[in-house]
Length: 349
Ligand code: ADP
Ligand code: MG
Image (cartoon, helix red, strand yellow):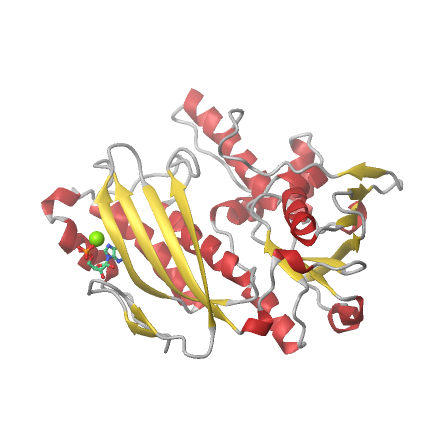
């Protein structure tokens, strides 16, 4: 659906080493914890007084992204940002990434360069250094694996397991938009498949599509929490939908929760798009996923410090009844929250 770049130079014309040089040459090291970046057998990092956080994510063409509507620059950006989000979800700060690529011969040098332009922008926006990776060929499709290294002080790390009875459940930003963006793109793809001359008109869906193709990670929330001297009792990022993430926190903390339908933050464009697709926006928020917002719990005493922060919504509280997770609807019915996280091994994808 999105048009390819004009020039296409085969990777075999320059070889692996020149390709690595080309795509990594514009990256500069900015963090003092990076002693040595790209160019040796290992990167060298220094974290004398901090705890180190590590996480990794792999994205496979056809499983995690669809090349017909994913601009390569956005793919690079997103593959980095979803990793940063995991570090923020521990109340830490990402500092380095390593990126491994398996590339099929369908991809040109220009295409790989576009992915790295996206990675470079993400690194710049979030203050992260690219310090290494691996480049190899793949028989079918593209695979990107990103590993992030971050830092936190021991007493600041927020685990999934720390939620306590009566803690308030908080969420950043708004939920469900990314899923609606995906539905719009899938719909346009179907129309386009039936008629290749069709030009998708995405006017009116810009926000939801952007949330899907170019998500951001919530470093601002981490900064606000530090400024207010709050360590969340538990935290997780919302990659699989609110329902699934609540289950993770409650299971790890051995608690339950009540959340309130009318408190779930949903953007107006998400509401309109959900109406059009005849699905409930709350379902999109609960089961959609890929929002990359932060879900966290705080002590009741910390409420005063956060209550006027517009980026944070208070959606419910933690209860003492393990595995009893309820959504209280607008008409005061309690509906059990089922864990319906996105699962790449389910066959009905
Ligand atoms: P080795 O043979 O030791 O694996 P490589 O030739 O694969 O070394 O890599 C050379 C340097 O380039 C290393 O610093 C490595 O981390 C870096 N590098 C390789 N591929 C990538 C990539 N796709 N993105 C970023 N850095 C890379
Ligand atoms: Mg290598």
